[in-house]
Length: 182
Image 1: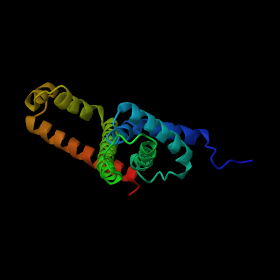
Image 2: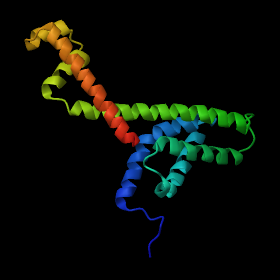
Image 3: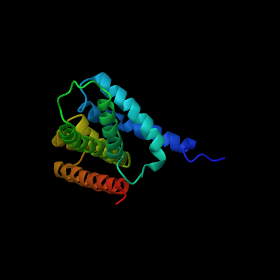
Image 4: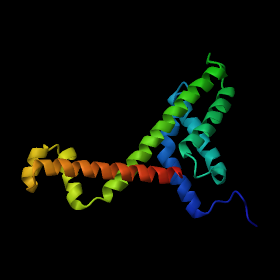
């Protein structure tokens, strides 16, 4: 007998990884709507249970944080309806705050995706290009000093760094388009 809610091990692992990456954004979203950290922790816990139950309904072409925050919003309102009426904010005001917080969560998710793409693209660089970037941006060495150290003209180092940055930008944009399903 096959249970449609049964999730295979690979899907379960994808859920755990996806949720773990998104949890800080979901928590920040929920925290903007609730009066205490403890309330937010409780709602995020309940949200995780609902997300797990609905995982088979999630469309991987869509942004997980956006979907999860939509579920979390409903959980916040459910939670607040069960609490004593201490808050003086109407549901309309909370909905507006939730919309603003969701925009912020989407932005956080896009920044995280961009950093993941950049790290992957950096990993594709040759050791020579990676070394130049490390010298310039991690160690903060001036271009003139890099040129002297590697035995190249200053203009060559400038031009090489410019080309590396352009390649990285194209690589990041390509990876983000692939991730968005465009």
